[in-house]
Length: 181
Image (cartoon, rainbow, N blue to C red; front, side, top):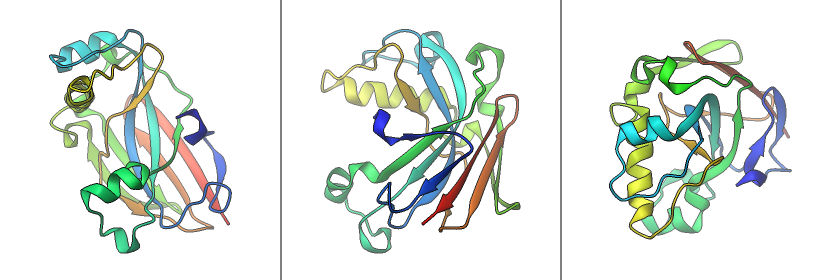
């Protein structure tokens, strides 16, 4: 939801956002230019319906001790969602081969993870199509203007107050967050 969005290049407060044991994920976010209503959505449909792709941090979090999460915990724990931030850049998804977009993630200036768009079900559009089709079974569509996160391109990076994370996605741009108490 919009309440979960924080600004790029901002300080993310553990206390204000009720973060417990957060981890940073580098992702590609899609901003829809058209509705998507599954089932029957393909990766090509996602590409056609997407107005922009954007560099994104999702800060996942869990109130479940040591991240020992069962399916019922996922529902009760808001699907482990904490906050997210979108980079400033907006790129037409048809201008990139999203499967080949490369992620470089830094924590406190040191390499913390690398990956490619293909890490997400072979292609980020395939991951968004899967989600659209899964929600479509419950008659829940994606609407024009909504932001859809594709999934992590690299392993999660734990963060604490005092940490700074930054990411670069080749051809797409960058994002940065700092964590405070």
